[in-house]
Length: 465
Image 1: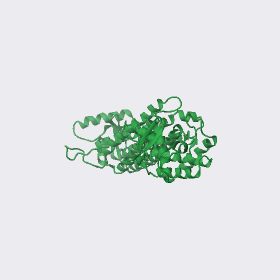
Image 2: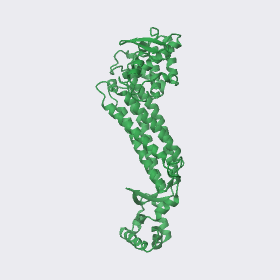
Image 3: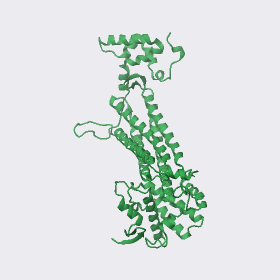
Image 4: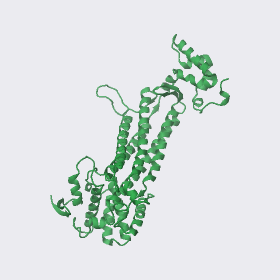
């Protein structure tokens, strides 16, 4: 293997000649070997977009000559297109508030730009990673800005997939609207309702998640780009500070704005905590819904598609594996979200030195939830109702007597309940048959119809006298 020698203030280091990265990346590669996860590819792409915006700004203001500008822009575009992924090998859990990752992108952009210019890698006298690619920047404004951009892309993807999940639940709500069933509270039978109404609760919860995720984008559209190290803009021209966020907005299409107080935007990462709070709400809903669907499947009121054999010892056993996977995935995403809170709260003074953990976990949490929603959309489409089973539970539940309270009053309904238990001791009879026998089939069918049960209360003229 051929090497080139690069220097920094600590001395020299050998860099494999085929690598686009340089000495700063190499030192980080040697120092940080603590996890099996590398920096997210979406963050690398976001950093390349930020570098492109900075380059365009510096070029427009006359700080970069045309030949350097064109080479840097071409290099950034290649990274944005997904090229050179193997040149970003750093562990996601790195010290330095993201400096290693910022230097990684600076060096890769610089060395690729040198190649485009017909020069050798490492020829930093011609084009320098810090003096040119990182001109008027600091890790402390570039890195948080790129994280916000990567999160915005991810949230847009999540919002789109939550919309699809909401849609499939709404379709099932309509499909099951006329199927009467027993409601359940505290894992006990409760008053009657419809299967469609049960699914409407799922769709409404997901609808709120969709709205929350969509609105959460607003929380991270303020960026601190131009604030440099601590938000004061020291070492950056004022003209650059005012222009660079506009360039980034043009490149991304997002309604990004420069934070009014860049010191605040650099020191505090509570906006990410607010976003993960919304992610945790979505996790909670997915876990609850998945558990409910597992129970409905156990009861036989719905049938879910069998996707794989469920046991190595029990022939024919099938498990609700998709919902089990969704629950586990949401627990993982929730754990990631909790770590964003922890990392944000442990920052000190003017920056959050734990930004690598913040970025890795919030991006991972959203990515997991995107895939969970895709998986559930596909699976929930296949759910079928079992009206016979729903009706069986319904007809045999003494609590359907509750539907007659407005018509008969509590005392008469209580007597019906007692009489049923007395009669059922002498022979098998369903509650519905008993009610039809005592109140008439037509009246019972009317009161226990799906329309009546879901009419949102009774009319005044239906009150008992």
